[in-house]
Image 1 (cartoon, helix red, strand yellow):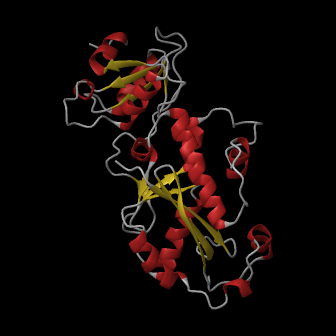
Image 2: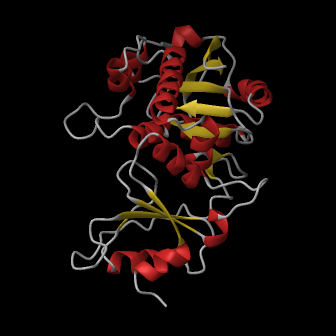
Image 3: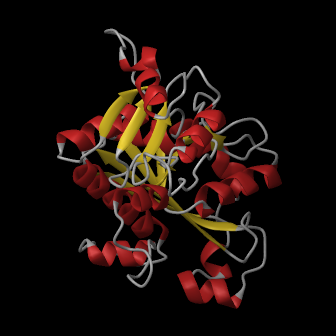
Length: 298
């Protein structure tokens, strides 16, 4: 069970994601900031005036500093099998691109994007409410920080994750299981291999169906292919969603999964739904065979 994590943020010298000139690392331990580190890096690349205006780092600030070729081995050993928290795909992509540039392996860690976490944790920031950017979320939650300072951005992302965990009652391990990424050969991180149901199946339901008004999510090992089950649900009127949120009304779980014996692990979707139900969310847990009877499948 992952409980501690390192929040990370990078700044680049120009529009090339590989031109990293600063990395901020903030270690969170037992729900609090434990220590913080900023690393200035010589990107061996040009600095654009636009990027300098954003973060204030100039070529003279990184003169004589180590390159990513030297930084990668150091941070790789420090981040081995660690949960890395970041806000938006930019940071993990930038590090993957820099690794490719220098022929280094991808960082051996788990990645969790707090932008994705925020979109699932809170419905209130879409549209005209400022969006899910780091600055808007931090302002909403009273988090003071210097935007575009790598360590400060990393700290803000970590505090936003802690706020999401507190508000949703979903722990770090469950968030990682649901939307985490892993580093693999080829540099670019990807969703965990063990996530068998990450493919999107969302669709609207038939308004004339008997279950119109229900919003359903599937999890676990089903007897039918996931896309087939989703289509049957939509034909019966259900709106099909890909992830658990307070908007869903039903979680359909594979028959065996819903009867898990001691020692077996429930899916992250099931754990998340159970946590929401405990908080009063009107979500029903339904086994696959019962659901199939509801939609008229023999």
